[in-house]
Image 1: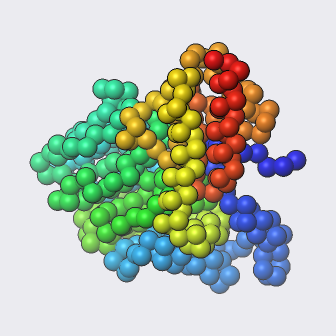
Image 2 (image 1 turned 120 degrees about the vertical axis):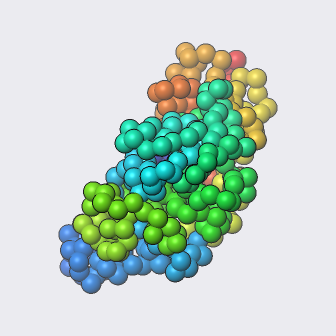
Image 3 (image 1 turned 45 degrees about the vertical axis):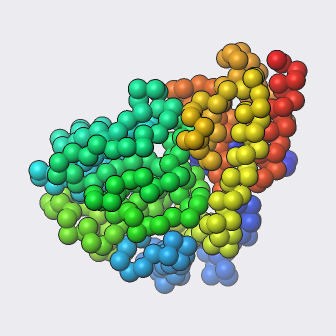
Length: 359
C-alpha cells in the first residue's frame, strides 16, 4: 500500500529518502558485511558513524568547541531528573516555566528528589492555552528551565529573546528541535528526544556548554552524571547504536535543506491547516493565536461525536494520527519537519469537505 499521511505526535514521520537508505543498508551496511545493529559500538566502523552524526549536528547549529554534544538514552523523562540532580547545588534553586505536561513533569521530578524549586511563570491558570512572557526568578537561581514546544496543548515559544540572560537557560526542545534556526549560545543546556524531528525513538540529544560543567554536583549515580558521558564521549555504556545511526542520516537531510528553509516550509505546512481553522466556525483552535505551535496543531469540533467521526473518516482516506492526547481530547495534527507538504494540503482539504457535510 502507499504510505499514509502520518500526523502522529511521536514517534513522528521520518524523511522518505532516509528510510530508503536505511532499508538499502540494513542487511549489509556499505559493504561491511553486517548490519549497523550488529556492529560493536567500540568498532572503527561504528565510531565513524557516531562521530559523523555528532559533527553534523555541530555544523547545523554552528556549535564550537565550547559545547559538548551527547547522545544518551532514557528520553526527556531521564533529562528531567539529570538536569535537577546535576545543576541544582546546595543553596541553589531550580526555576521552572510551567506551560504544559512535560514542563510540569520536569518541575515535579526535581521536587521528588528534594531539590529547591521555584515556579518562575505558569499558564496553568488557563489550562496551558497561552505562553507566559514575563518571568519572576528566585534568589540564587541555578537555571531557568522551559519547554519550547508543548505537544499536548499546541503552544510553542518561537522567540527565545524574551528569556532572561542573567541565569543559565535550560530547554527541553524534544518536539521542535532543529525545526528552525537556533542560537545555541543563549543556552547552558539543551535536550531533545529524537523521535519527533531528528530520528527514531531511543536516542536523546544533549547539548551542554562546557563552562557549566564545573558547576555540576558530584557524588551522583554514575549513569545520571553528565560528566560520565562527557568524559567518555557518550560511550560509557553501549549507546543506542541503531537510532543514532538513523539520527545521523536525518541530520544530513536537515543540513541539506538548511534550517531557514525548513522553518519556511514548516510555516507553510502549518498555515494550510490554521487557515482552515481561522476561516471556520466549525473548527476551533485551542490556544492563543500568537502562541500557536508549528509542530502540533490542536483544534476542536463542535462536539465529541463529530470529533470521533472526523478522526474515523480521516483514517479511511489515509490521514492518520490526528486524535488529540487522551488528557485533553479533541484533534491534533503534528506537522514535523519530514511531513510532506501534500499531507497538510490533504488534511486541510479534508477539513473543508468534512465541514460542508457535517455543519
